[in-house]
Structures are given as structure tokens and as C-alpha cells.
Image (cartoon, rainbow, N blue to C red):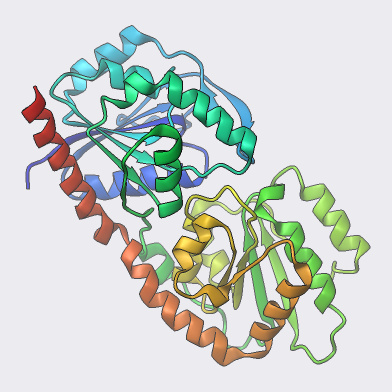
Length: 380
């Protein structure tokens, strides 16, 4: 296999613990292990002094599509050109949609022999987000012609990329390195309390409040087995959620664990008899579902949005309408009481998550790189 020189391009900072960053870092680490020369071209800041990370811009924080993210200020074009000349990249792999001020400038400065591949990551949460994306698509019409291949992480992202950006995408899912999640010790056999786990940003879209409302429905049911709820994550809704828990008498059932570092996620998720993710919209995929499937000894339940639904197929019984808290409460009660149902779901999840392992998806992405390089040579 020919060694490739690959630039993974991201407008945001690599330091943020979001799904796109996880995709870039997991894929980049795997590519390096396969002997390829990988460089990261990203926005700032970056806390570590890594020779293979090239910070090309200062970034400012904004809110978009229900998320808090950072966007780049205009990157120095001469710096980009000099960097690309020195790196002599075979492939630029750009995370889409992208900013014209960083990734867009990198793409337009790429050498004629460099293949450009994209991965499209988003599904809009709102009409405002969709219209904003339409405006960006019109602005970047010429830029997008430079791409030889575009991947989408899910059918939902594929449909949005086609409808708004006019892109024809190949679906290759988000990737996960299963090893850290499989190696963590599971829940102690002596702990008979059923543990419910939520992990995510404490923002409206992620739906933690809907989970808490369902717990209110369950807290006084004497026939239920003992259970507890662990909340992992921070965000602007944290004070409100804590007040809600206190006001509704959940303080003895619900524990707020704050931000969970990447290194600690496997151990946190490994406590879950039920891992519940009530996101309402704006999900193109759902890496956290894969992480929970790999680590948790129990069942993963997911909000019925397009991205999560594509991951959970065909087990739609593990999906739920997040805003219908009473129905969610009944689903939670069923799985609290039925250990055999949790175990059956876990057996399916253990098999299902294998297809998303970076060792399975990664070779197909390398094949796409090589196809893009051949196409680039043919059109020159």
C-alpha cells in the first residue's frame, strides 16, 4: 500500500470535544498507524504543541444549529500557500460544510495534483439553519467543484448535502475506535441498582430535561426496582436542570457529574444499564450512541431524529419521541424491570457497533482517497 501524505482540514479547533473533532482525530490516528503521513490543518486555539497540527486562524465562538462552535477569522493566504508547498499533500480531506475563510482558502490553494475529498457532517435543526446553509452553498459553488469525492456520515446528511449543496455523496459512517470502550471494566456485579446514564451537552437540543421529566413520572412508583440517574456534561442549561431536579424531588435519584473528559467516557458509560440520549433534532449521526453500545452493559435508547434513527436501524423499539415524557417514562420502566430485554438489546448492540469500527471503515476511506487521486490525474 502506497504511503499517502494526507491533510485533514477542520475550521474549528481540534480541542473541542464534538463529533466532527472525534471523527478527525480517530481517523487521523488510524491513518498514522497504517503508515500514512497525516497533518491536521485547523482553527485555533490548540493547547498542545504537536508538529503535525497546523493552526491557521484565530476563531470566534458562535451558536449555530443548536450548537456552540467556533468559526475562523480570515486565514493568511500566504501562510496557507507556504504550508501546502512544504507539505506536498497527496490528499486534502475537508470537513463540510466549511468556511471560505479557512478550509475554503486551503482548498483553493491546493496544488493541481492534490486530490480533495470532503466529509459532510450536518443536518439542520431549524429552518434558519437550513436557509443559512443555502446561502453558504451559493457562495461556495465554485469551491465545491474542486472536490473529487464527498462522503456523508449518514443518509440524513447525504440528503441534506444533495438538496442544499447539490453534492452527490457516498455514505460512509462516522468511525469509532472500539478498543478503549471494550477494555474498560463493566458495572460491578454487586450493584443491584439500575443505572440510567445521560451524556451530552446540557443544551435544549440534547433533551436532558425531557429525560428528567420522565424520571419525575417514575420516581414514586413503588413497584419499580431501585434506580439512579447519572448526568454527564455541562452547558448553559445546567443551573435550570439542577433546579428542576431539586424542585421535583429528584436530588436523591439524579447525580450531575459535570464535564466528562474523552479519556473518562468509556468508564462513565460502562455504568449504564440504560444509556438514554433524548436529542430532538439536528443530529446527522450520533457517535455517542456507538460509544454507549461499545461500553455499556445494557440498552441504548435514542431520540427519534434522523441521524440517531439511521444508527439504530432496524431496532426502532429502542427509539422514542423525546418530548413525550410520559411515553419515555413507560419505555424506561419496561427496561428497568426487564433485565432480559436489556441483555437482548446489548447482544444486538455489541454486534451492530462492529461495522462502525475505524478498522472496518478506514480501509474504504483510503480506497476513496486513491480513487480521487486517480480521477485528479485523469482530468489534469
